[in-house]
Image (tube, rainbow, N blue to C red; front, side, top):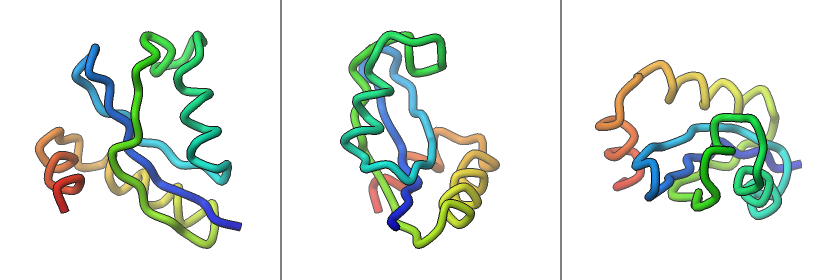
Length: 82
């Protein structure tokens, strides 16, 4: 089973969202772009700008926490740029 740590970007909000999932990224993105009460429910123009693949949910979640711990848009931008 593949799990992912991913970064989404919304042009409307000019914001990034970091998450993890063991669902195919296309399906997960559809859920983010639906009208719901979560953080990503504010708009429906999210796009995947970066992802990493892991063998377990634990690893993907750990990587998500690591990225979020930086609390830096600059760090995320550098990560996306490679």
